[in-house]
Image (cartoon, rainbow, N blue to C red; front, side, top):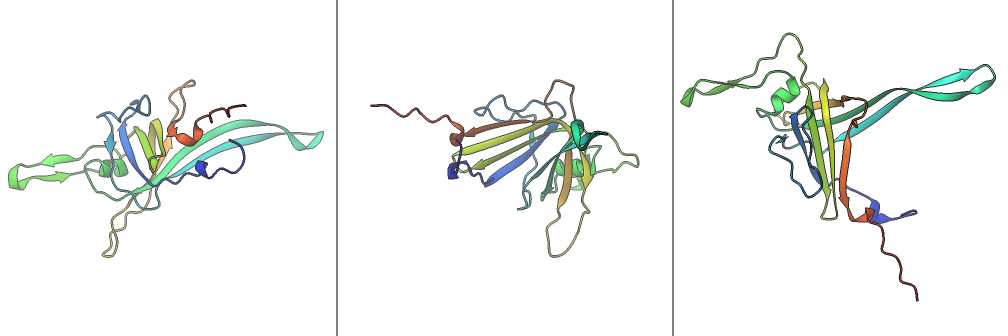
Length: 198
């Protein structure tokens, strides 16, 4: 609907971030739940999630004009940035990259170990994001293939929670598959019923 419509204003009141093995499919529709292949990464900071889509466009300049004659798309980046608040067997390898957490010992001597490899390893994942604005709207984003490409410094202080800040970058699957998929259930998107005529 064109024009001012307050019903189309969305606030991401609550949401979650999930990860799975690369190329794992998300829910097929808005009535389906996330499968058991997806792991919820838990609490995030109040900054929420920041999407950034950046296209690199190169101008084609000509002798005959001071304005470009056309543009050529040379690059597309889609990144998702957020800070995780929980330290778990899922979030630590996601932040650090590479190998999973190991369980060492048994019984009372049980503890856990994570080895940060000296050489970086490919750690591709699928990323799912879901948020709701009350009961009116639910949005889902699925990136089937991507990787953490940047991590923020890890601060250990007496006055604040440990934050695992990451930037996740989408990777192309092939020339025909989308870089990301957005699905939503939102009453404001429904076509209004036609007004009865006398």
